[in-house]
Image 1 (cartoon, rainbow, N blue to C red):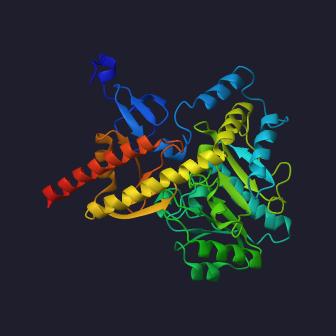
Image 2 (cartoon, helix red, strand yellow):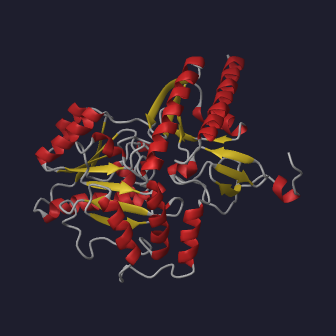
Image 3 (tube, rainbow, N blue to C red):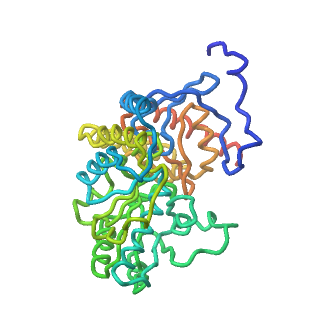
Length: 411
């Protein structure tokens, strides 16, 4: 270990002036490169969180840095009062690659969800059915932290202390088709789901259920909203997770963010023209959403994310991870209960505390995320190399050994 300055040796100290809503790990980073993050003490970590699926092209990606720098020297922000050419370019890229006809740009996934909910309700209002306001969500889902988003989500703890539950939202058991059929009625506006849940424990919906939900929506005039904020933009090995069903379960509306800006705050709500028929001038808006700086980075990110060779690489690396994690589960059945997810959204359900396991991984200089149902998640950059994947498995294996030893000592 190299000699460190007094400033580098100092551990990060939580500020008394930051609102205490985060349970932070005692780590602070000063720079990143590719799949590496470098802490203020100079130590390097293999980043298999990627900012929770945000830095999909790695840290300080040269193409994104160049796009940001070039645009920063020209124009950062105007207003959506004026035409923003970058919006036209990125919207065209997204609609040509998806089911959608139109796009609204915001700054985050939560804003994309807000727009999706408003779009669904306004669609029915515009069609003469103002009573159709109900949004059906599912247990374990996570759609963001705004009031509408947490009401749509399937985690009651996020609503504690924020007043009564808002009307027009209900949650059903995960992947229960009979419950869905029973719940859809005359006041249903939309069904919202993550094709692969992120925070809920990396659970993927079955293809059969998604097809059946699409058919049910068609039969009842219900809109289908996909939240692909975490599982979209290459994370599963296709540009969007719904594409695995080959057109059999396309959504009417979709929220995306995270990887869309490769680390720069960009969110978007995509919709068919039919679903968005109520979104007329004045019905929605954003001060910062879709500004020139965000669009320049978003365009550069999507240009890379749509490349067939990158998506093929994701599928190959995911296959390696699946094989290796299956082996680790065989070796550590007292630690690993289940392997979940799709592509490079990998969930590992544990028999021991996931928070403690995350610390064991950090001790090995591997960064992983937590998740519901006592899971940990690996969400590495999509351009992670095979050497880096092998390194991640080695570090994860040593974390399993530590978890086993700790459990035996406590028994």
